[in-house]
Amino acid sequence: MLKNKKILIAFAIVPAFLLVKLLAKFPEFIETYYSKGLYPLTSKLFRYTLGWLPFSFGDFVYAFAIIYSIRWLIINRKRIFKDFRNWLIDVFSALSIVYIAFHLFWAMNYYRLPLHKNLNLKADYTTETLVKVTENLIAKSNAIHLKITKNDTIKVAFPYSKSQVMSKVPEGYTALQKTFPQLEYKGKSIKKSLLSFPLTYMGFSGYLNPLSNEAQVNSMIPVFKFPTTASHEVAHQLGYAAENEANFIGFLAATNNEDIYFKYSGYTFGLRHCLYEIYRRNPEQYEALVQTINPGVLKNYQDVRDFWNAHKNPIEPLFHSTYNTFLEANNQKGGMKSYSYVVALLVNYLQDKTL
Image 1 (cartoon, rainbow, N blue to C red):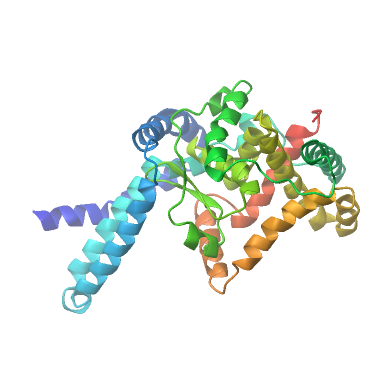
Image 2: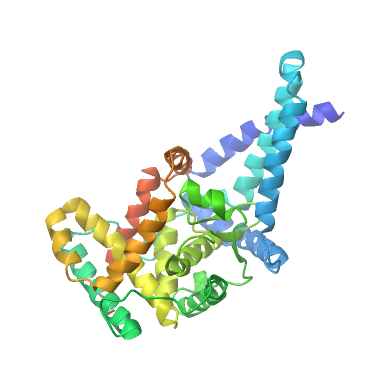
């Protein structure tokens, strides 16, 4: 009886896979019945259930799963040759459960309607508009920087601990939901990842655990990055799976926060993305714009570059390549390059606004 159940579970991955591919062709259906229907219920359940824990439950699950899997492979290594069929059934049973849970609790959000359609924004923009928005972001970033430091050559030093920054993240969403009610954030579950050390050497600032709905932030990254990184992961919690969309919402949440340090982190975050796109299009224009940025702002940027450069290693590209493949397999054309598509959202949202 147990064997038959395992076979059924193992083969369940086939209809599950086909169902996901079928539903992916109907983003309006996903948007209505999953992203705005089932998902908000399951995600809030997880956040209210696990959010109060002072540690990451999901990281413990990951660590246990890795240790258990390695132990199981060692113990059952002889079965690969002696009883390969049943060994394979066990493996696919586990994969089937993970695949179904992953899509049920989170991943169907990859197939919802694009955010620019929900916000009635264009998906393209001109270089002229990009430059105009970038100049406005430079002016805003410089003004906030000077208001904090009183000296344009000094970098901004945050007066908060990283835990204090995380506690302030929901304030930005509370302000943001006045304009975008769909971004209401209830049931706080933002935590420093217990796996921050390996995350750093893998090159990641944070992640959302899809099975526990905990927003994980790499505790080793500079505090300057905490407001936007944590806000980005909360956007994932709210069902915005695409990285470019989570970046845009993270920008909105940080810049709508009343705290000036959050605004600084948010505006310089948006500015950095726009500058990269200008550099890709016109390196000379990029150099001219950089000359107008306060030296202190550039020092904050340099701190982040120094941090990642200090942790570069030979296996980091492998993790990025793997994640790139994961993104492409989950409806994000361009993989990690899709992060730059946030510029289209930023430009079209900000072009008519006074910062």
